[in-house]
Image (cartoon, rainbow, N blue to C red; front, side, top):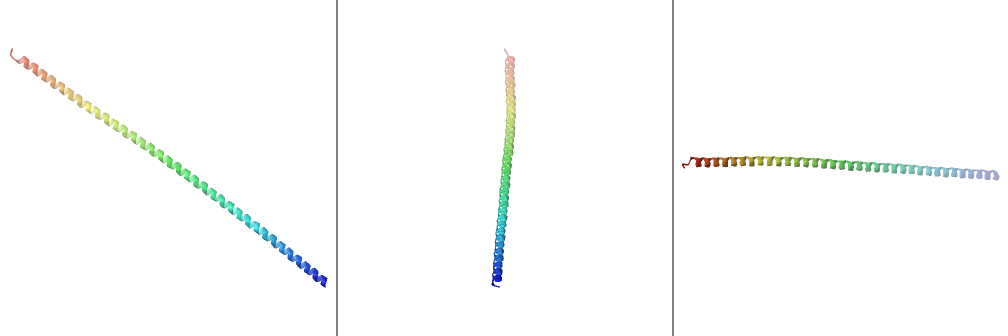
Length: 131
């Protein structure tokens, strides 16, 4: 009876040890699974953060290119407007010079005509004087 009781105690002890070992292995496996899940989640989070940083950098680069293009367009339009203004001013100045030259020529012709008439009047007066 003592031997049977000791065998049963030994069997119970072994069963408990095996149960404890099984639980320990399950806990270790659960711990490894959770660590793997956490590592996977951390990896996904880092990948998403990296992707967001990449998208942000691409957006900023696109905005920078757009701003540069707007500056080029603005500079081109300003240059075109300044060139048109310069041409308009040159044309106005040339027109004013032509008008001024025309007035000067007209005045010179009038003066010439006045002098010619004065000379003719003087000659007529000399001819008409009794000699």
